[in-house]
Every structure is written in C-alpha cells, then in structure tokens.
Image (cartoon, rainbow over all chains, first blue to last red; front, top):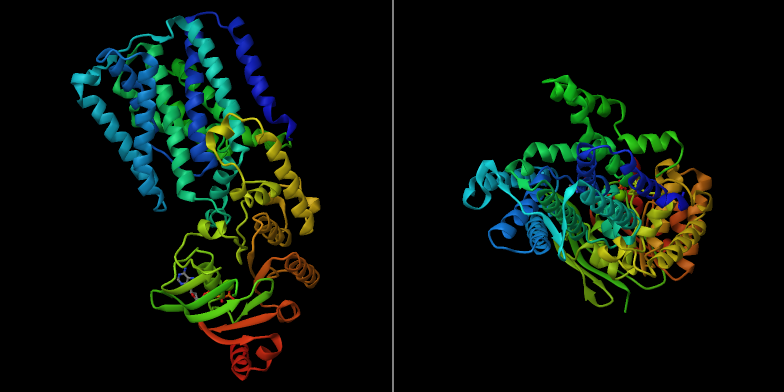
Length: 310
Length: 253
Ligand SMILES: Nc1ncnc2c1ncn2[C@@H]1O[C@H](COP(=O)(O)OP(=O)(O)OP(=O)(O)O)[C@@H](O)[C@H]1O
Ligand SMILES: [Mg+2]
C-alpha cells in the first residue's frame, strides 16, 4: 500500500507525456488544458473540503482575484505577469486569512455562508469596478511571459500545465502524508481528539483555507493569460459550485479523485453539447445519479472495489 | 511539590453545577482515581483539566504554573494527555496514523517543507511509523498495525486511544473509563495495561466504574458526588468512609 503511493502520479505523468500523440487539434488541446487548470484548483479545494472537512462555496472568488490581478496589473500598471500573479496570490491568501480566522473560531455552517457571501461580493466588485475591470464585458489580458519567453499557443500551454499539474499532485500526496496533513485529517475525524494531542485547530484550518485560496488565485492568473481575456464569470457562484461538485464526484479526501473529478466535469458539458438546450438538465441528472450511487465519489468507490485503500 | 494541584475548581452549565469547589493534588508517579456515580462530574473534571472546557472558577496548577482556561493544545505542550469516555478515534485515518497524530507536537509540521518533501522528512516519517507500531504492540494491538481505524472492534479502539495518548510521551495521562463496555477478560487486560503505563513513569489519572480495577490500581482515590468532593484518600480510607457508602448505596438504590 505504501509503495503504490506515487503509482497514480506515475500514471498521470505517463498519460500527460503520450497524450499529445492523440490530440488532433487546438480544440482538443484546449480541453485538456482547462481540465488541468481545474484539476489544480480542485486539488487545493479537496484539501480543504475532503481532508480538513471545511467547505468553501465561494472559491471562484479567489480565482477571480488572481485573474483580475493579472489582467489589471499587467495592463493598467505594466507589471510583469509573474509579479502580477504573485500579487494576486498574496491578496487572495490575505483575504482568505482575514475572513477565515474569525469564522473558524465559530462552528457549524458559518464558513459556508461566509464564503458564499464573499464569492458574491467579489463577483459584484468585478462587475462594478468597470474603470479597471471592463465591467460585465470583461477585459483583455496580455500573454504570459517567463523571463523573456512568451507562452503562446496551445502546445506550449499544454506542457506548462502538464508540469504544474504533475507537481501539484506530487505536492498534495506529500502533504496529506505528512504531520501537517495528518493533523488536518485528524481535526476532520475528531476535532477534540486533535486538540488534546496539541493541534492548534484554528491555525490549521486557516492555513489550509489560505493555501487553497492561493492555488485558486494562481490558476485564475493562469486562466487569464491563457485565454487572453477575463470576464466576471470566472468568479461566478456557479463556477464555485462546479468546483465543489468536481471534489464530490471525484471523491472527497482523494488526491486522484480530484483529478478525475476535474477531468470528467470539464469534459461533461462538451459531451452533452449534442443535447442542445438540455445540457444543464442532463448535467444535473448525471450529478444526481452519481450522488445516489457513488456517494463517496468515483475514485474512493473504485479503490474500495479493487480492494485497496488509497 | 505535587505534579498537579487543583484548587477550588468549579464549572457551571446554565443551572447545572457540574463541578463545585473541588480541590485535590496529585503527586508524580502515582495512579490517582476519580470515582462517583453517573453525572457526578468526573468527565467534566477531565475536560476542565485538559483544557476542553474553561473553568467557571478555580486554579489548575501544573508544576507551579496556573493553566486554568488555557487551550487543550497548550496543555498538550506541557505533557497532559487523555483518552475519551465516548470514543474519539479518527475514523478517516488508519490505526497507525491515529497513533502517529499523537506525536504531533514532536514533529516538523511545516506545510511547505512537507509539500515539497524536504530531505530528511521521509526518514523521520519512517521512524515515526516504527515508533507508532511499537506503541500499538505495547497496548496489545500489534495485529491491527496495518488496519483502518473504522474496521476495528470497540475494545481495540479503546486501546488505540491509549496508544495515541502515549505517543505524546505525556507526564500526566487522563483515562476516562478505559474499561467501559469491555468484557471481563478485556477489562483485566486494560487493568494490566494501565499498570504497565504507570510503571513506565507516567502519572495516571483514572476514571472507572469497575471498582475492582480501581481498588487494584489506585494509590489514591477522589470521590465526587453531584459535582462536589465527597472524600479523598487511599482505597482503604475511601471504602470505609460513611459518606461514600451512603452515596453509593443511594445511587444504586
Ligand atoms: N457540555 C455540557 N453542557 C451541559 N451540561 C453538561 C455538559 N457536560 C456535562 N454536563 C452535565 O454535568 C454533569 C456532570 O456530567 P459528567 O459527564 O461530568 O458526569 P460523569 O461523572 O462523567 O458521569 P458518567 O459516569 O455518566 O460518565 C451532568 O449533570 C451533565 O449533564
Ligand atoms: Mg463521564
């Protein structure tokens, strides 16, 4: 069981290496890139929801912060993209910490409510601050450049995201199997037990919330540069719900489940496009069926069927 | 100087005075038991001393330092460990990981270093697994070392909590009814285990309804009734105390 910890990662890396042989056009590449971006966000979100047992219903707000930090700082203020991305991540992390600290001292559903509200506020701010954000129409974003190398075209983005995703999976696997990760899972399993062995519960919850917000923000910046355009829809409530659904479908507290959930739900709307007008209904029906028949999510259910714990 | 000194400790829940003006002290190295009928305030007392509840009044002095009102993790830092009457095992983790969590404060808990798997951490982790497995063997759970917590029987989970507490390398260990719900054979095994723990140098505070076990293990006994201290002393003294006899007869009548 312990030896196979990185087995799934090896599979992911192998798939990412050979996948370009099967990608025939820009549309295919685009789909995979968006899957990878979502997978990284969902990895972070699953650490919060699945492993630590805390909910965020406003995570798209943090994606929006990253996306708009990159868009605004590079265009209005001529910042280099990486600096803008870092500033966005810092802002998202700081905001997450400010919101989370008081909330985590309370119990119950306050976090769900607060993150929900935060998401709405951020989305509204992005719509209303038209002078900077272009309002509901959005604004263009300059291409990403790293030390003079401009990342342009789907192929370049594919390899960048393949690398980022692989590293993120690796880091998540390391984290959950570390003293930090065990403390997170322990406070989910029994808060009082984790407290009496010395876990500073509030601090750990804040730390993982901040980390997931930073992940989301960085991926927001990446999305903005990759697409070359950003609209307030990135911070939309439905986007937040979509991300939570990816966590749940793939499997709570499952690193590989996060990737599977992101891949499937990113592909699903494309696959359902043939249903013309009924996509949303079909989407909802599939989600409901998953919830009923696979309440633990795909990967944990399959892992249990195959008789080994992940 | 005693290891732990509790002075005039009280806890009020709304109208219920769960613990009232209780004072006692515990010397290092002994087994100290707290007994009393259901609802007497034993668990509340444990919750107060381990920081889970904040006292309404009173002092909890450990090694000369008043720790009343400090959080559980601050008490853990000072070597206070406990188990729970109603199981508090993390069912989302393996048995071994539950024990490993007990070592939390002794480990490098840095998030970034963990995520990037800094050199040295993997070796430390292996060592910790080894230590945790040895602790599981110490409490008699060697056959569950590779097990998930949610696949273990009740009696084994009770001991798993003891192993987790021992992983803290505590000075003071509070056991809240470690034998509750166990059959006579298992109770005897827990009795032996508590003896072993005490012999290893840990000061043990025990709440237990099994009188044979209490009398067998305890150096001193505190009797609570309706939140108040009814008696305190050696087993013999307590057994002969007329108030104790009356309370127990009353409670069982
Ligand atoms: N969190 C709480 N809120 C309100 N009342 C409480 C709380 N915890 C305990 N009590 C009350 O305090 C009193 C003492 O309870 P406690 O659990 O400490 O008793 P106990 O001696 O451990 O009993 P038992 O032998 O049944 O475990 C009871 O009347 C109980 O209802
Ligand atoms: Mg009790």
